Length: 385
Image (cartoon, rainbow, N blue to C red; front, side, top):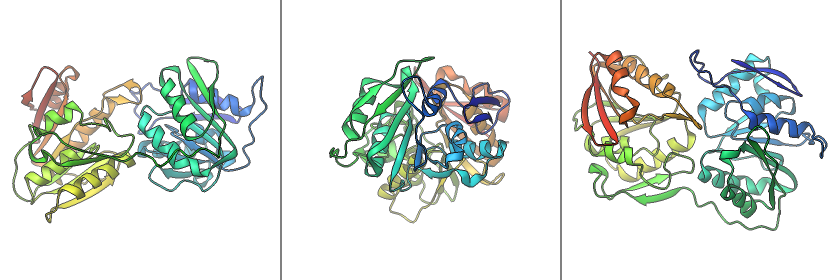
């Protein structure tokens, strides 16, 4: 936990879930730059925050907590970001209802007077969100984006200009930059191109030639990522009434393939991204027409799954937290999988060879088998004894 000092006060903030080994802060220079700008700079007075303030993409609640006195609406695709916001509000003695929490799948406010956007890693997510928010923006709306210099590109600015209106950027401060956009009510950007649907290639087993649905913002939203493609060729062929979990399901192709391979299985799709779970459900519904059972959960890993209740966990863990490379999420997923699996249950993992997941799996499970490998990826199997 660290302390962020702003013109609105000092706030003790942490990421979620809290990890004593995690040294990453719950904010960065881009958040600080935006907050200073709102309070007033050398060439501009303070921003009027008396209307509806929408904060989009606030990663761990630093912006929402700082602006809580103005009762902002936070819009996020991350359940962990939402939980971090709740925890950080409570940590600083701020009432839970000071911030209205919405997901990117919810209807946005009808009118937005101040729109603050933390530029996401995914350009597709930004595009979709700008389309969704444009009807609520009016000529007087103050629109400010923020991000690190490495996150703001010419393509980023073009999206603001095409969907909302003329756009300019600030000077860089501590490797962060601001985006200023003047809404043009006369623009007619048309509907969002998301979600995107495409047919899968012929070399992916049970899903060959079938259609996948990707909402904006999920990993490799415009194509099947090569790690998942490799995993699909190596999935276990099991039969019987297994309880299967597609952990970190993304667009749901792994769990959908498991349901097609074993129609007697019940499959639970879990991801912390609201868009991912929506994608997984759309992919599953289009491709599985049998009486197979499925559940779709926006959740913090397996935290809501009872001990020793699962037969098979399929996992393609992320190794990034925004732009930071870390195995924190993967470590939690492996530990939770061992807890949730029944004796004899199996965890199947795909990952880049250099990540060395086999070392941690052997430590946790006492065993780890290489099921498939190529020069880049490896599929591992660990059994709970």
